[in-house]
Length: 298
Image 1 (cartoon, rainbow, N blue to C red):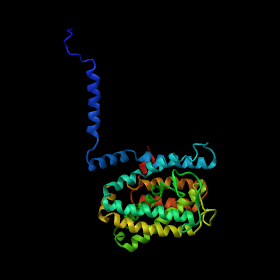
Image 2: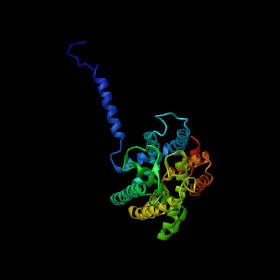
Image 3: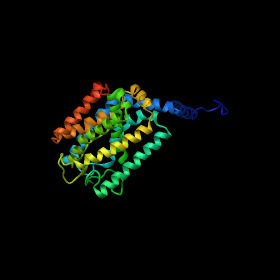
Image 4: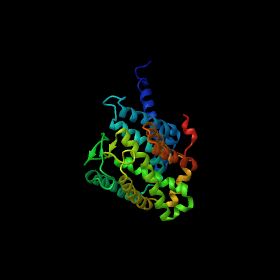
């Protein structure tokens, strides 16, 4: 071969790499609508992993940490806990994403600020939830309050809000009915959550009449539920929420995770009433066709 002939020895790999990079870029969405469709597809294709497998593993590891089966530093590892929570929250986050605009961002910002404020007051004074303290590390803390607190709290009230919209149907258009129903649902979710969290040692109230939880705690949750309904009503347009609920079958999968995780923990520690309330939530999800029995199979 002539010395003047063009060499292709190095051109092939460079061209291939450049082509693969271009193909990857071509596959990535370049519009908000495209990104939303991509995220919808990812969640839809992984519903079993997100809504069943993650909470089941979470329940086992939390119980194992509480019982001393899992050694340090893996027991109650804060980043493992936060990662698991974020994965389980993903169907709700992706479901709400098309509804998110500047108005929603502003009102949810108000709810986030309230969450930090009321929790800081609660840690410092014992009002309105009763005297309590965090017993394990839940990630970075500020003034005794986890920075990730909104990730734990706000999805609970959003799930309650969405479930009530489905169960109430047309009656949800009444502000009074919606307020009472959502507040009662939020308190019922805490009837499941707090006894389970106390049992595994997430936080402690120093004792209480209801599985180690003082009854005053639930009065505090009524207050927080009312604030949440007020802000969510203003954050999202009701008809748009209903349309998204109708078209997004996985929007309440986070509540499926809640039932499996905290229902399972309460069963393990013999908290009968909280476990029964968790079952009631499961039945409510079945009534709305949001608990797909197929999720229990890979």
